[in-house]
Image 1 (tube, rainbow, N blue to C red):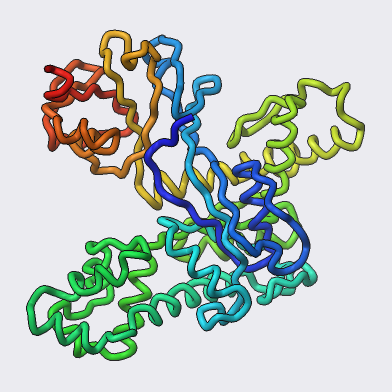
Image 2 (image 1 turned 90 degrees about the vertical axis):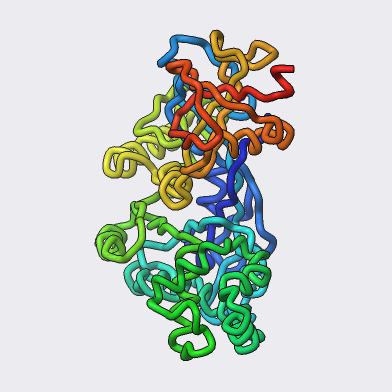
Length: 407
């Protein structure tokens, strides 16, 4: 199966919060899971899915997905996740596995912060009595660790860079772009961070240390958007903490990674009917389940699905891509009449692309040659011709007409 154009999602958090369980539940990659710090030493990579309603029921056709899956009218678009080594206070100074954590986070376009909402894991990632630790402190410490890591990177030669930017009038964003290139930070993020910090873009050499920290903290928020997964929601102490976390300036999703992992593994063995993100499931082979296994599944249904509407794992992935990264789905086809490619496959591909993507840019995303020979696109719904600057919308179906294709 070909991979759709997408971005990398990092799963982060301190040790022992259920971070690797979340990753395994999302990807079914057998990440090592244990009840002690630093279980994840090397980052795990896997493929999860963004869930979106497929367009094929609207056109009353049977699709033949190639770069994604379609199950009962639900299109599952593959995306890459990375389970990053657990982080503890002082990681930015190299404590714990800090250096490894920060090296991996460079590549992530957005972050899912898995927090033990029950308060049963202390600041070092060691188990404690549920309710003993305040999970809000985990949010604050992760913010600081990432910000201080970025501060150390940007502080090198800062005075020289700031003076040069003032002297040549090219602006601080121009001079920082190369240094930040390895962190997946775009030039426009730098200018936006300066404005949000209420600093003088033309006088960076006059910034105080406090100004500089405020700028970097805003740059972190913009370039590495983050949502909070309030994990272990089934524990008694979790709900009150979730309500407190919802008052923070983040999207907070209640979650039970363990419940999702149970359901995904049962579905993989065809013991239940369940798609990631479903509000319910159906046991299909009760004769192959023990009484204990059936009780466990029923507990998931009663305590998690009926209470919260889902396990939260799929909701977290969808939220990361559709809200944090502001992406949409687009379906390219060649044959408008049959909504197929040149091999006759109906609606074979689904692409996740940033909101604001133009028809011409989308052609480049599909293939560089298609972008270079682009003439125009056609909207499959109304057969309207659209130009290179036309902004695509979510669930658009379009055909690219190129000079090469016309010839």
